[in-house]
Image: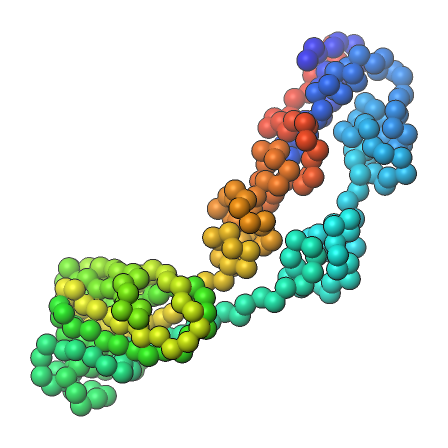
Length: 306
């Protein structure tokens, strides 16, 4: 593009936020006499500042000469594509603007001492608390109080039977150790799904929360086994929390800024695609429907008159 001198700006407007400038149209604007007022699309916006100089007749435009996109029920789906135009405020909707049922968060905390089955390498309860079997249980000084399973050694295991809704679940544990080298894994219905190591936490009662991993299950009763590969460490509790990802893009709803991403879209780490393919992800894009062939610039460039 040539940069003209005189009273005109060589480059009228370039967007940092996904609002494109048609290069051919900018060239045409450069060739016009800067003193002459022109409005070729008759939208009330002078061509010299009109970012959308070919707007159809009788269209409502903004100060930049671009069509105002209406979303009457403010559900994030514009009226032209909204098949449910009267959705109540705050509702979660699909790509058609219709309300969808949002899965409820599931959080299940299992106290380590509330097992249904076990294997322990030593006879008797070394800690002497809560139960009279071979699992070693003691009173804990952890913040939650209650008891913890201690003196945990290699090859030992604890099993829990749980009724769980279908979904994805994140496993976390509360563990403590005075030494390094602890190692354990979780099996769900006999299949290994996650593992973690326990290094020294500073003491046998200095508990830390560990994020172990995630797994998927169908609805029903499931057997959760904590299998010890190497000791020693203490265990206070195990927690299962549902991972909710309504649009199935791999980003949890809690951090997903674009909750209705179409299947198969390339997204950023906040769950947002670039639906108009202008190089700006939708959570940063101020013009979400930039027409094809319009270039989005990353710098604002203005050439003052000489």
